[in-house]
Length: 185
Image 1 (tube, rainbow, N blue to C red):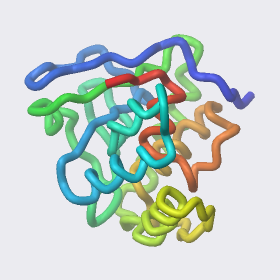
Image 2: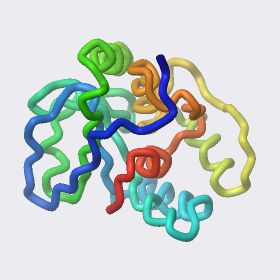
Image 3: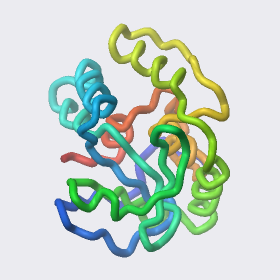
Image 4: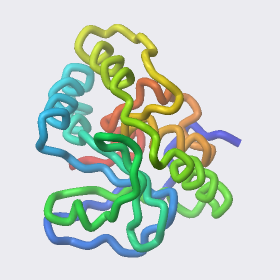
């Protein structure tokens, strides 16, 4: 059964050099990237997230945990790839732990979804669509099923686990995931 609420696990902050332990497949990572696209995402999200919710716009990237040692599936240019969580240790990041109510089968579905997309392309159309929505408020679905951005991949994986059924993954951004799972920087 799909749920519209966040599980009880919670978000944990890790500062530069800190190592997250006890990860479970299906958990996910939020981070802030300093490159041009990351900065654009944060600035544009601040147009949509105002007042007390503005803090969530800090997050500009997310990735799904697919292994207990911090193996991730994430979308970066040129596309969907596997990478280690250790690459984020030099910076601040949060791990969102899904909690005990998300069982092993739901976690397996989430990770299987993400792993099946490894090797697919970066979603430039989806990124353009997100930009139009953030900057102008135009909700146009410009995407291809085999092209992804980080937040849509994580959102669809979480939906495979029966979570966030009320969100349209096409328009989910890192700030949406942060707000839903209370990941404050």
